[in-house]
Amino acid sequence: MASIAPSILAADFANLQRDIEMLNASDADFIHVDIMDGMFVPNISFGMPVCEAVNRYARKPLDVHLMIEQPDRYLEAFRKAGANGITVHYEACPHLHSTVQHIRETGAAPGVALNPHTPVELLTDILPELSLVLIMSVNPGFGGQKFIENTYNKIARLHRIRQERGLSFRIEVDGGVNLGNAPLLVKEGADILVAGSFVFSAENPRETIAQLKQS
Ligand code: DX5
Ligand code: ZN
Image (cartoon, rainbow, N blue to C red; front, side, top):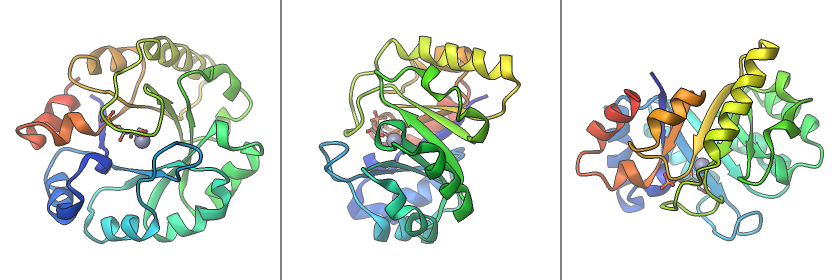
């Protein structure tokens, strides 16, 4: 059974408390919090104050995905705002090992995200330090985009490396996830499915989360 991390990027920001309470009452395992800075990605989402407000009502761990340049500047701030896990982008971190240690020092579980063009093999030397690898299945920046098919292959390769080396990081997939692609993603080795628009545009979001979990 997969773990589900609905992304509040697709929630109704004018009714955030209502949507968080829906997630609290659902089978969701995490709440995925997408932070965009308008530099690393073209879009701007929200920052620490909104993360802190989400945390005030959330009864699920916050899985914070930083799509920002120089994320070291904000690790303590997001930890204080309630992040249980903090994921930074490989492409934004020239000193990735140091950034991962820094995340661990804050007390959060460290994750690294890969853009669609970045091969999983580039993580070879950092994998033992990670709690999570996030495979982007769309180009980061916006919800509601089309799933990139090569993702299956990347997850399968990463899963094989994990098995061969006896490592225990979790594999998360983010972007365009729905009931059509979820079963194969899980079969290839994904442990956590992020879903934004598919959950929040559903007639019955709680039921949709429960169905995704069965994948
Ligand atoms: C994309 C974000 C995703 C996004 C997923 O840049 O990282 O987490 O919210 O949204 P959907 O599920 O609509 O693709
Ligand atoms: Zn995300």
